[in-house]
Length: 278
Image (cartoon, rainbow, N blue to C red; front, side):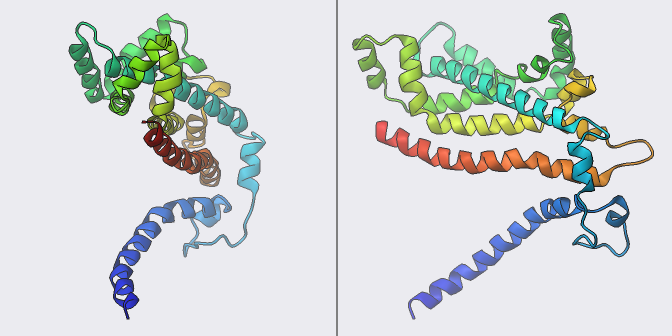
C-alpha cells in the first residue's frame, strides 16, 4: 500500500521521458534503417519504416571508395578532431590556470577580452582566418582545420571556473616543497581539474568532428577532405545518393556515441577524484 502511490506518481514522469526518448531517437533510427535501403525504396509509396529488401550496398560503396574516398576522409576526421581536442584542452587549461592562480597586470582586462570573444560569431572570422592560413601556406592541409580555434574563449572561461576551486594553500605548499610552476600545473592543477578537462575534451571533439563550414572553405583536395565535407559531395545537381548519405551519417555518429559513453564514466570519476583530493 505504501509503494502504490509512489508508482502512480512516477508513472506520468516515466511516460514523458519515454515520449521524449522516442522523439529524440526516431530520426537516428530512421537514418540507420534507410542506410540499408536503395534510393527507390526510400522514396517508395507508401513509406516503409523497415527495409523490405535490406542491402549492404551503401556501406560497400562507401568503404570501398567507389564514389568518394570515404575511408581516407574518415581517417582525416579522426586526425583533425584528435589534434584539435588535444591542442584545445592544453591551451585552454594553461590559460585558465594563469587566470585562476596568478596575479599580473591587466589580468581583469585580458579576461574580459577573452569573454568578449565568446560573442563573436564564426562567420565574422572566416575571411581574416582564410587570409591568415593563406599567408602561412596552410590552406588545404590538416593544420588549417585542426589548429584554428585551439584557443577557445568558452574553454578558458569554463576551466578557469573549475580551477578556482583548487585551494591556494595546496599550490603554496607545493612551492614550499620546491615544485616548479610547470610541475604544479601538470601534477596538481590538471589532475584536480579532471572532470572539467573531460567535459571540454568531449565538447571540443564533437564540435571539431561536426565542423563543416570552415572545413569546406579551408580544404579543397578530395583526399584531404573530412568525412562531413566528403559526404556533402554525394549531393549532386541531378542525383542525390540518399542511401550512401544515411550510411555515412550512421558511421559518423559511432565515435560520438563511444566518446559519450567513455566520457560519462570519466566525468563522474573526475568529480569524485577532485572531491577527494580537494
